[in-house]
Length: 619
Image (cartoon, rainbow, N blue to C red; front, side):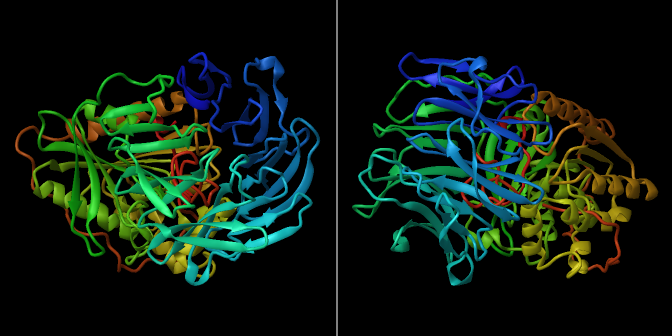
């Protein structure tokens, strides 16, 4: 096994040998390491990236040391990782992104590369067939190049469309060798209000398994030595495992405890290994066959506080929230921890920020607002009030519900968001200022148009889909959803954390927003990190956590008066009809794994597109 875990505050790659039961740390990079794999000949792979997220794949023998490291393909230009394909015969395919395009190379492990193709905009290598004769590349899931199948010489064998009545389409990987079947590429398509598995075969094309559909997002992988598919479904903030049998056309449950599965993989003997967690329990590895798996270096015991969930009525259906309440304190000062994405969701999963806040006496509210995954296609695509403004309405509605139930203090509620969640926090601070007493925005979008112009190809494509065009085509839509348009209405003090190397929520548009706050005489603090958008070094997370906890303590507790909670200062919905000037300063918003695939690449299903930022627990 190869996996990532904490090593003195940094995410690093480890191996585990089932025969000896021993785990061993493989990487010790100063900036941490996240992307890793193991091939059929027991070589360990990881992506060696610089501070800007660009680099190359490296490998070494499973039992080798640092002196045996070699480039996966000698001479591939450095870029951001966009997929790795490995065959039993030692053929390697790598995709890297740079300068707005994704390049695909192939070759023998450790040998020279041969260029296969170059894709403008967003693309991701979804897999290579065991015989090395087919490569699958995923593009924007709703486009006319959702999946492209190529031969190693670059000849296009098939192009599968994701638009039209069939909806979005994703490729999940080729059937492995040893299953007794011909080449098959696993697919998942959104078909009306369901996600349906299927396969593509050379000569016969794509065929959906209409008997294998789900009402919420899924990801899937082949069993390595039998005719089966392991399916991980995200539903209402929790995960479910299923096994599909194509021969019998049946789907059965793989029993797991209630909570979230951050990853799952089938073994050749039918065992399934998965990484399980819940809001009250830190992550641990589990085997369905009872195999002892390596422990993870995480916190011991249960998380403090009372963990529950809440459904708040809404115009497009009830809004689901996960609550963590400090023991013996009700109503409590509350922090709304807003998830990124937008195509992501908050999970019944351990989160180090939640742990720290609850232990410090704050209630934590995690809202799966409209646009979140795990609640079906209609929920994910519901933006009736506009981008961002719809989500702000849901945050305000849930807050009003919690105050009415006496669970949180009306005079002490705050927002804390990261990435797209930071964008929503800033937008709510200005578009619906009444309810909030403090706001923390980490690596946010502050000006939607400017962020679009400086963002990655995948993020630009997402913005254009959400807004209905570019900033030049629909300037009013971008301005109406931009936090910078509402600076004059902000009442709560702000803590804004930004990153100098951020390519998803670029730093310059944050600087312009901070300048606008100064001109409007809005009380705020700024904190700058010399990092990119994602970070694998816990020291940066801890620095932000400390700063934010101190800020929230001052604003929610020390400035308030003890005794009876004050009346609710503001429960109105987001302002969605006010006119704003169209000539706002350039700024911006967000999407990601791939950036068209999963939120955190190892965490979600095929569906997550957006700006994502991993909080400390996510590694």
